[in-house]
Amino acid sequence: MLRKRDKLSDPLIMRFPERIQSSEDFINFAFQKACVPYMPRNPLVGLETRLVTVGSCFSANVAKYLSQAGFDVTNFSMSERIFTTFALNDFLSGVRDGNVSEDLIDDIEENRQALENIRSLLTEGCTIILTLGLSMCWFDTDTGELVHSVIPRRTQEIESRGGNEFLLEILAKHEMRPTSIEDNTENLLGAINAIKVLNPNNKVILTVSPVPLHFCASDYPILTGDFISKSTLRLAVAELEKLAPENVYYFPSFEIAKWAAPHFPGHFWGTPATDGDPRHLDPQLIRLIIQLFVRGYVDDPNSILPKI
Image (tube, rainbow, N blue to C red; front, side):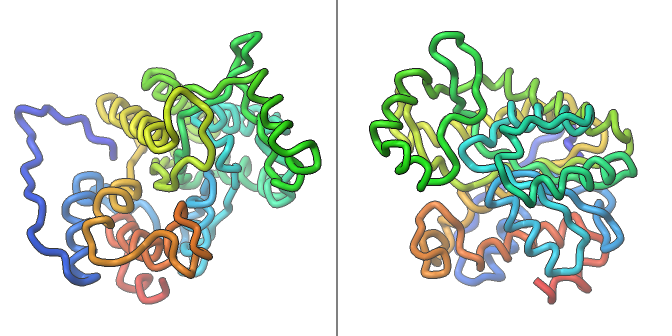
């Protein structure tokens, strides 16, 4: 659970390891230094648990590997370009009210098919894994209102509507800018409330996607923009830790991929398995992350780990 801690009375004293030479070293390092402080006192998930995952590509990968291991998983995939906490709050509020915006369905047929099932699962009781994507948002320059969907999902549509000239027209009417820790915290609380209204016994597991920004058009270069975007999300989760809402948990996939993996002598980004795409994780690292999740959050992990 997100445990409220007194920094003076309950410090976490840790040292960074001197050597990480094998996959076993890496798993032990990531488990002890990232996962253990957030592990639930009792396992959250068993093979009988109904799981819902909401997020972008990283969330879809989590759903895939958990499904392969035998879990009952329903995934709702939001395009990376729109998956903010604002979109998450609007989506889950729409699920609660039975009125999800077409912008968030994003013309993805699998999403339409999943929607009714997700509301039913949340009403009956389930565990939902929310993978937070980005906190850089688009705003209408005339009204100042946040806009979920500005750039079309399909590259072909951009090209058919004029390519770079079309993008310049978008940028003339919209601006991308960071959002505040406070706004993102409020959005997360709103999303959690929508889940709890449907069933107060629902469990929520928050994660932050390690996948960086694909596009940035702000006052910051893309690397700085991505750093600010992810840091804002993680700090919003830290604000939730102070509040310690019931049945809300955190799994540190972001810390494992962005802060632990770079210190392991391996290559996890832009591998042949991802067609050289440097923004996406090699399946080997995703499997390691899922193994860590199973080890810390799942009942009878030894019966499940060999399947991953």
